[in-house]
Image (cartoon, rainbow, N blue to C red; front, side, top):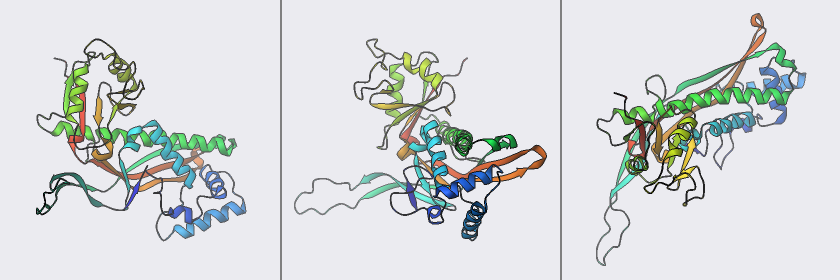
Length: 335
């Protein structure tokens, strides 16, 4: 099992398989970009693509996305959707079950009186089983775009794939039903009868006490805490909150000196959040995301429509590890 600091980016030790096969080279990237947009290939570029194809034929991986483009797509996804980079990311092929340590019931480190034996440690774990759901995005490249420079085309392709795949994955980390897509945090919270993890508030009147209640509800287990909200809700709800003596709490957070945090907790704009929903939690211990198959891009010429169809896809699964790491602030229903 390989842990990642961000999906699609290699762990500190070891070499990615596509680097070993030559897909990290500038020559391969140029050949691949020309291939995906249907531009004529030189003999050298054809040879490079065929060589990589033969190398990867036994694994069924097909034509690898150039390393730099794959990593840049992931970086763009995280830049646009911070929750993707904040949750625990794995890269494990195939279905698997992971046991995640959530606490120590007894036997933790303590003072031991002379002549007393150490108590055996009793740990608590949660088992999460992950498979994979296909997330894809079709990018249509008109023949007229073949006249674009390589750099312009690369930027366009990266942005299109990252924007849509990133939104789909981030949306389902939060709201996925777990049936035909990855399991989201919010459905798990709402499924708990009478859960204290859902904190109601009055729309247009989010209070200091509401934020405190959400912090208390998501206080276990220990981890790095963030608040996620879309931009409209950030300005309409969070920026109008005042403390108990009437001061706006987002003027300047004394704990960090930043305007985009409160109580020392970073507030991150996440466009995948629904309007009025505010999610507070500890993503590094509260959610696990597995990239069963990382970003893959294929292309097919569509002569009838005078375009090249480029598809970016990934095989992904994810699930909350504990609801106690999360709290949802949501307005009470209108009577």
